[in-house]
Image (tube, rainbow, N blue to C red; front, side, top):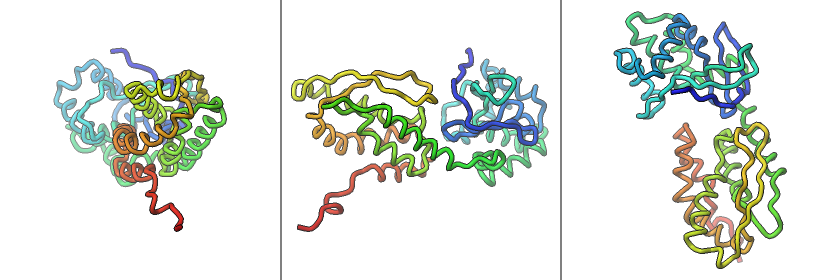
Length: 299
């Protein structure tokens, strides 16, 4: 299988103690293949060969591969084992324009293997495993790169503002982005980085469009129209055409949004996007509208 390349530029990447590491726009950290080799105290050729054999499906049939598959499953908290140990990303931080980036959870799984399960364990793997396990690999890399997580949240606010300023709905119509800004803001307020991989307005648009058709709402409120939507330049997606709906349908939409989408559809979207499962209940509560009793002034 040919390895896909993500047109995603790291927000920071450099070598620290001869280990190439970086941070992606969504906050996830990574090591390069050669950086991972040094992190684990093995020859770069060993990690490169492992990654090639893994992609061919050969490594998984051997005892080492089976142990790694189990560790990856545990570290990623998923029964699905990736077909590749890395992704190719474009970058401007190295002589080569492409970096083979190993995601943080797979870094920990492979380091765990060389620290505890390999026939000959490696002292570098043991040392680095203990450091990363103590702090969490993401925080460990942030600290080594002198990277501030608040920068990522500030960038999320900037991207949201850019989308708002560049996308004004035509008179008489509303869009799913208009109505999803409260959700996006809630994610960012709860320290969830929002970039082109997390766009609740897309989920909202899919479910509302289905409801619109199923209920024949065009006959009640008039036809929806297509308009252009402009993404920030850092987004990988092309600028799309989106639906704009007549304002006459706004009351019906908001009732459906509060009674159906938020309690029934949004939880599945959040669970599929947010890796930190401890934040899910907080995020769900944050977007639910307050009760009438808590907001209404006494008569």
